[in-house]
Length: 245
Image (tube, rainbow, N blue to C red; front, top):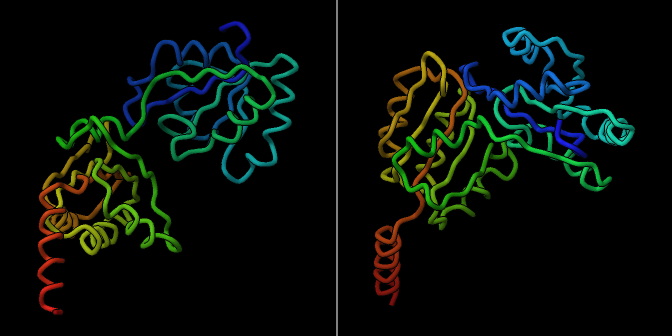
């Protein structure tokens, strides 16, 4: 283990178990214990890797109450590996509170590079990847429409996570906010057997998922507002202004 580091944030595969790194395997073997979002899910990975290790659940329902006691254990010398069910902890998953608490206590934290769903989805979307904003999951109810309105003028590529139960509704809301011709790329089941990416206008992609039952976890990559769209809006606004005179 690296000197003075007590918390290791360890990305795990988002689907294909071959995507675990050699260093991640070593850290999981050497840590005193593993904090897992769901110990049942992580036990499958550990069994695949031939690792036997103490595990404790660390999820959004208990993290507020447990971070201080975990920090105390690390201050006493124990080394911890933090994992989520898939991908990198703290990216739309538990982990931020523990990392922040460790920093406040002066405990060494090291984050390993590795799997996360939005990077392959962004790169294979064909949309600009030099500047982007990651939105994760939109609010399910309160604040959802407001957040979309706030993103209406965003010129960077936007990335969202979504469940199969809300993907159609989300694309419908995108049309209401961004128009039906905005380009979008929707990836599901990344790195898994039935991986699929559907690209086109929002209207075209919505039609696809209305005709094919959505399954799996989704990453939506939405084009930002273009200069052409801004120009058209300006012309329309000017025309409306002249009509009102």
